[in-house]
Amino acid sequence: MNRVLVVDDDRLVADTLTLIFEKSGFKAKAAYSADQGLECSREFVPNLLLCDVSMPGRDGLSLANDVTRELPACRILMMTGFYSNLKNVREHACRWSRPVGILTKPCQPSELLREAAVLLASA
Image (tube, rainbow, N blue to C red; front, side, top):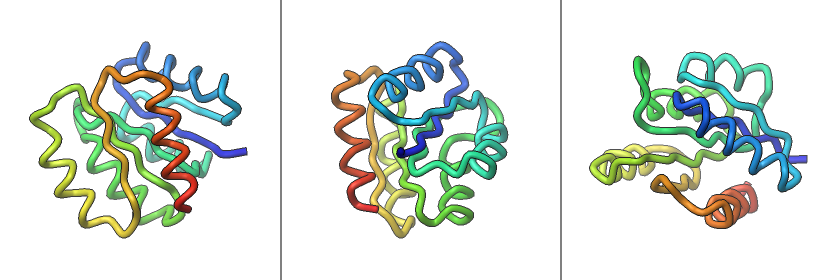
């Protein structure tokens, strides 16, 4: 069973996304900050990190950098509600040695699950 770690500072968003993955047959866990997400990733060892870009304190790109380094098999799916973040996310994604998905919020659950499946299939 694939494990998904959802990291978003908006608890409602994180919990909703976690529920979507659980209802679709994944083992999913939520974290509400980049620091909590890194700690969780070390214990949970996800196959996929779904991470918001803009969060207070450390941002999602910083978390993705750490997870990329510490968990080389983990796939990364970044989400942002700000189109202005897309260029920066794409530039960071080019530096990572794995496929990275980028979605804008809000997105349909079917789109989220489809993108997750594509990334996990590339593992």
